[in-house]
Image (cartoon, rainbow, N blue to C red; front, top):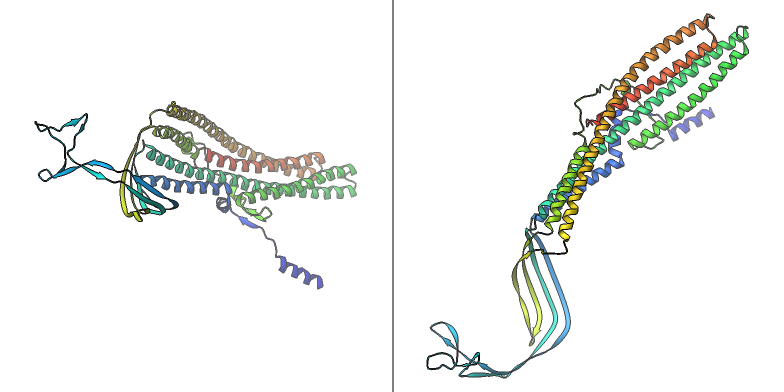
Length: 469
């Protein structure tokens, strides 16, 4: 009773570990939620979404609030020299000031060289003007609106949109890669489970055979050598069971890694998820144009061509309109502030690049060469994708044939094992032949499990290669 009590207490404290059965769809959902690479691609797509908005802001006016406060102890006196200055009279008829000059008999000004001779002068005694910098404060608001930037603003905005599309396609690509990897890991765990089943079944057959042979030895119907032969096979089968258990554990850890669970999580998978016919046939009309990678290459090529326009825009005329409204307070002259009122100004700036040692020409040429290189890279990668599609189609076709032949071999191996067992029981077949039938059955079972796994994985990879994921 004491032992039972402690066992019950331990179960309450630590719980009973029970494996959770996960269907394939649940594993894919978990992987899409927890995969770090996919999360990184999603963050990149979100980043480009905001970059598009930031480039779009360049089409609108840029308002800035500014404030400056400067203090200086600079002060002094500015002297203005005095002297005789020419005088002017007001002409009421014309409403203008007329110089008091000496006229000749014809009414023309008398000239002293190139300077007219004035009839009267006013004396200006000169002055000393005291000034003091003190504290000068300026605050206001400014506006800047690009009118024409050589196409730079429009090109940069379109390039940001291309980057956003590429990032979104990157998310699709990461999703398809995650799905294929999870399906493959799931199929490998199912296969490992099947390998464990066949190892246990093979061990059970040999254990039963060992019992029969030992009983026959006691009755003098079998030799000690026959018992030893079976014992050797039993030892080999025990090792295969242990190897199958280790394979199960590693396959489960691999699947846990992809779906974001702790590696030591106890999970089970549904064998039916991959043993069913995937119904994926080779389509002769399939092509790579619907794959995310293909569309990414198209966008990269377009992005490189727009880079040429962006480089060229740096060396075209640029027109910018600016306006500013501000208030200035400060700068004392004769103990009175010189600036103490608001002011408004408008600026139209036109910049025309002329020559800088062919810098613009060289940059545009480099961008054109990069665009050509990108196009060549695109053509090469598209050829590689077409080769990948052809290989995936061949692998799928071979996987169907492998499954059909494996099923046929399994049926033959089962029939051969039944026949050998029956003949051995009647004493018409040797022990070596029976053990060989056991081995053939085990191999056929393992090949069938591998064939089912290979077909499932080949179908998933074909869907990815043909852009169906």
